[in-house]
Length: 477
Image 1 (cartoon, helix red, strand yellow):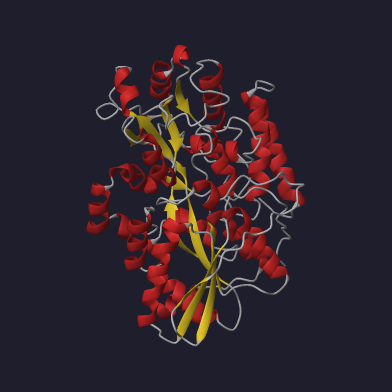
Image 2: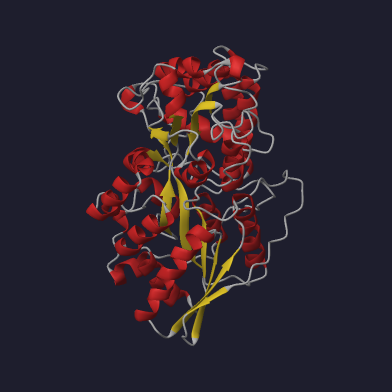
């Protein structure tokens, strides 16, 4: 019997992480895995959702796109904005050469609304054949017992699932260790910097980038100039308001940057067990976050509007989804660069959570042809094609290391650091409790930021509440 999990109006990862990252840029970037240049970020990417007690938003009506002439129609729901939807449509069009009997109906719904739409469809037994979701939604979908186990299809198609990065697959494997989804695109989070401000501060990140937290503190202090209202570093939201769960996501990365776990292993699989972030590296990780704000005054509690892109911030903690809009808004004001986010030691720099989108198939009369299609969709050729056309990071190790993708990176160097750090990504609570836990933890982390609690006490309280949530939801860590 599956654990009962009901989405209760909480922000999706794309919403709350986005709000966290966008807070420092005045809402410039509003998605956590949006490559390409969408016509209007605010209109096409998930926006910050309402508080848990608010009603679900009504999905925005967008006309479906029909592809192919086949008599059997497969329906696909997705939240890819235009810059990603167009490459997807072009790839889907090519499937007519594989199976001309099929046609496709692709329906777009904003990411902040899609999960609720899917769950409503499940309740009403009106699901699509195929759905593209955020990776943290996959365990929620598995828990419904409505999605298809793909292992037999992998064997039939000789599909090598081990070519995908393991951190991504942790979401796609259920408690039974069977696969229910396939990763299409991915990302992680590193550090943008303003080359002009860095140079003016007497620093040279190209020759000597900050590699440790101490290095980052020193650089951030040098880049801070209160007379100009200029801040050294933008870490995103320093509050849970409008960014539920974001603080926990940041703390995870910093904890991994100490070489520690956030949650313990369970049955040999990472980040599924009891909370351990209140011991080991989790404590100095959040203490550094508090100190860079309160002691060193190099991070704003309320970052300036459009801070980085207008030249008021030296560094910005962000992901590859933000690159197109950032470059466009910066214009000729300055040149930006990207470096690995420093670690507690240099060797641990670049460790991050994994993000991205995955495809799943719902049980039904079309499940066999649908499963075969998403296996084709996530082939080596199509993963590389989509990554280059949509400006995403590939989910396959063979593509990351291919000559073709390396050539694309040479032409698009801002993405290189993200591709290189895919070997250092981690899964973030790959269970149906992701939202419950990250929101609860963030509330306690906020107490430490505002010095209402010591870091140790805040983390102890967060760990205790996490265990209570697990027990309440019937989850055994």
